[in-house]
Amino acid sequence: MTIAAYSKYDAYRDSGVQWVGQFPANWELARLGGLFEERRHKVSDTDFEPLSVTKNGIFPQLANAAKTNDGENRKLVRAGDFVINSRSDRKGSSGISPLDGSVSLINIVLEPKRILPEFCHHLLKSYAFVEEYYRVGRGIVADLWTTRYDEMRTILIALPSPDEQRTIAAFLDGKCALIDEAVRIKEKQIRLLVERRQILIQQAVTRGLNPDAPMKDSGIDWIGQIPAHWEVKRNKHMFVEINERSAKGEEQHLSMSQKLGLVPADLVEKSLASESYQGAKLVRTGDLVLNRLKAHLAVFSLAPMEGLVSPDYSVFRPLVQGASSDYFEILFKTSKYLGEFRLRVRGIVEGFYRLYTDDFMDCPLLLPPLDEQLQIVEHVRATTAQFHNVIAIKESQITALREYKTSLINAAVTGKIKVL
Image (cartoon, rainbow, N blue to C red; front, side):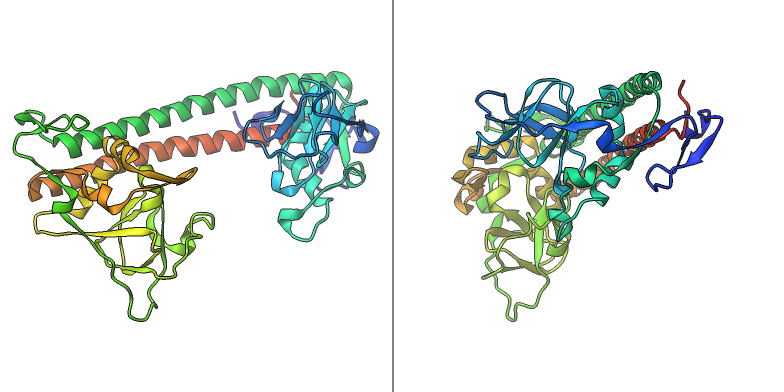
């Protein structure tokens, strides 16, 4: 059902406020400050459980939440209060609290007085209100933008009667639950498709494409059976590490991510492209490049172009004819090989584990004949493309559902549609 399919109110009037626009003639136009009382009572997190204010609502403090040492200087929250983070870098973090507790001082705590909490939940979390909330704030740059209560309380809101608030809230609760469930199902389908794709790829690169091929024991527990005509060698017999430097250092800087592979550094998120290029290594098209600090996360890639990479990367080139770097790139990203790399890495700091060259070179390698390597590569590319198309359709469906949910909430809480 589209938004246009819902009925309208009999009469509208102009609010004079851009985010509200036209609103039902029988609704009241009121300032937010007249509908709530700000709760500013200071408490300790030892007396009142610390809470986290997230985009999904209010919860007991999350384990990964940023914590302060000022546990004695927090704001009291009572069940039924609306809490919103005042900073723009936490945009959309708000909700009705289901329990008593305490929050950090960057949050605004409001006790609903002339507005029902269940309606307030949808109204003040709507995309239209969130944008208006930050519009009335102030700051130097976008990431440091803050909205204070003195600014928030001036926002005009179109307010229906309590009975209508209750009806709208119940309608949105039901519709949002259905949409959220549809999204959950499609997300599960995507996870299953990704798992199936990974299984099919791993079967292709570790067992070949012929299900009737005679098999033999590879002699390696974590690899198991392989086609009888395949070889098992160590990486050191197939690769040489390249430590070539650029003569002028003018080549394109390259960086790697799990999603994009090896690409120009300006295409990678800043947090992932922060490595130093001092002493950078030269890579040539077709080299197999490994981010040694993230080898266990499948951060391998073929170099699609000549360029420079961080000295924390390793660059490998096949030693002999009869080897396809494309095949090896796929092989090293399978769960079998990632599991082996995890056993071989050595920790530096939490989250960063280096795969040293000697450990990589000692790893066993499956080696089909070259023509079979190329067939496997083409098969994997075709399989990946098929799954990519199906997953892309489901992702677009999820996007459409979420956009519909946003539009439905905005339309219902501002009276653009009638849900009675």
